[in-house]
Image (tube, rainbow, N blue to C red):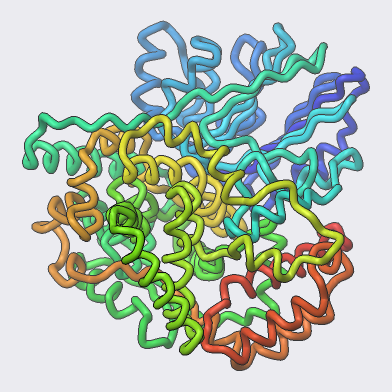
Length: 627
């Protein structure tokens, strides 16, 4: 796991070493173990290394191929590097290191861009072909590793994180207000948006080729999941095949020359990874949990699972100081990011890094096996729409009356759910994601701010490709999440939160071969009636404790609403109502004041929306300081 950076000057002006060095050093947290710079005329590559495989200098980067033609900077892990290395050796290729970087370099030298079909792992890399004068960049299929870039008339620059690009005076800085409009609904920014015009996030499963001499850039998608249910396998065949794939996916992610542990919540996904690691390892697995002092904390569940599998367990009580932590989080995540679970992710990564360098996580179970509650809700909503109009209208009026009388979170969400039924499901699903509705955004926008289009309509168009590769509402929704929410919310949350502390996180449930397998599952084995992840739990009946399998999906829930109405109420009011000048470019002061007042005095939980506004306020402020 590392940080990569690079500059190309199309004007053929030589690369300034100090500028490239500043970019590279801005990524020190991603790679504290080594630093490398390579320059040749108008091309420069930089690398910061976190040593995981082959800890010797033989795996130093930037790495140059034996014939001197190719130069690579690489961030990530190729889990099948040993298998590919053996295949290349059969072709007569020799190796000088024991790591995966040289294997990647030789795969590109042998197969060119088709090397991507050989890679099983998480990665973002750049390879310069000194003979053809081209630079090839690629990001892994799921988007586990980030890659940002910008291109001007004279410069192309890329890096693992935006903070490295901002070291260049040519880096774009103009706010993309339309992107912020979409952020307020989605709670994240979908690739290629970053919140800044001209600063681009390379989407997952994409690659680009730059011609150094002409400046021509060609981008393409090299992988996409297609859902094609296999109706011939028996249930037992499915269970055996999936368990075998899960075990192998976990095994190859345990390969490292440094200590490896695992995140452990109280849920099924992380418990599964710990169970498989315990079977594959002769020593007790080191496990790490985070929780709060709230009654809903999952720490007791995690400790029960730890005892069941005999792990060496480490628990961390979360008592975050939001006032001081928010600026750190905004610097870490770099762009508007509204998922409050970044708080426990950041803190448990900090805690875990004191003990191990690599941690396996349970991320991906919902995407593989249909674990999100919104999937059965979508199916239910489709059935609801078959009711006669008079019945639906009377229920709608009842919902609005209920909300008028009660004005609490349940009445609010019930009303939103019913009103959303009038929308196509592709737009309806955004109502379940926790951000602002279109009406709520409009109610606080300033008179001078206008957006070009509704976010739900825009999102519908953006996700057409994902839906076209699946049949049926469940698989279409799953593929939409796989191509949006997963790579643009969950993966940055984990990568940036963990790499801020030099911790590598691996996700066996997001192995692309496993995803290709589960995409052939009939949807009724994933969502069985109202039960989510049905086949996954059937597979685990003889592996996990019964209490874990029976536990309702919960996740780590922060008591933001309790904090914002209580001890953090003055902080919320001060930060939002005496807001940064840029805040008033988008929002009307009086309307925002009324929104905040209504929130703290009502029984409706708008804490997610308040969190997004606080994040925006801090993001605006840090732009002034060029953090």
